[in-house]
Length: 257
Ligand SMILES: Nc1ncnc2c1ncn2[C@@H]1O[C@H](COP(=O)(O)OP(=O)(O)O)[C@@H](O)[C@H]1O
Ligand SMILES: [Mg+2]
Figure 1 (cartoon, rainbow, N blue to C red):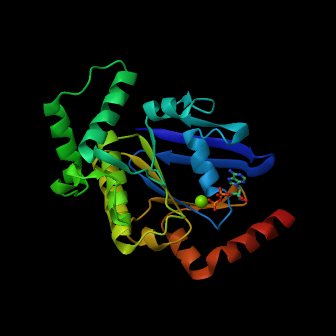
Figure 2: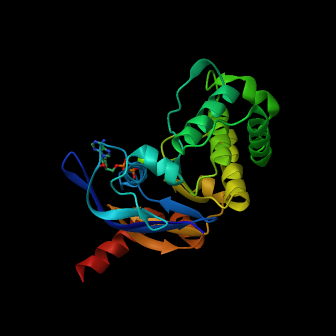
């Protein structure tokens, strides 16, 4: 059972305070939706969880299973079991999906002091992951992200997620303008890895669309650098019906008292 705990997180970008005392917990096997209006600090949070160097954490902590990762570099966080999907994947013409996945797997192993993966074991692991997230066999012989559609890029991401079996995955989907095909790939992948691998998934989104297919166990609303509401899937519905403004008004009224 893995737990990612974010406590009292304060963070600045270029001396501007973006996160103002944020608390959030994500557990293995659960799908946790993080919603909030544009500019609330959602992507800032995702970047800080992964250790992006542009952000200064001025207070608070990011702790995974009791290990404080607040000061660790991105590589160490990945080794400890955090995974973040790339919003802008790079294309590598001439390198097939298979070759890339094997290189990634070996890099992880070497970092842990383990020997490189045998061809047989690699095949077995990739085939299991492909089956889990419904990736067609032809996919692995294509060049990485070269001419991939939006849905295919997401398929690549979800395949890596299934293969790496991280403890906690962060998916920041907000600005990527997913089409229906891409949305289905992500939704199905998230549901499968949460169930089969026990991965805890923090799915970050401005819109409710994807949350119709991925039913979150928990929902948190981020507004102006803080979590202002926490609940179950019913919160998604509430946002859908009344928008963020009603919550903003409630929060303002409560603070004014
Ligand atoms: N690298 C950066 N440089 C300057 N300002 C930034 C940077 N990243 C985020 N911000 C600012 O932080 C605030 C929150 O942005 P962001 O985390 O992207 O919000 P969200 O993902 O919720 O839309 C915005 O006001 C944005 O302009
Ligand atoms: Mg964002």
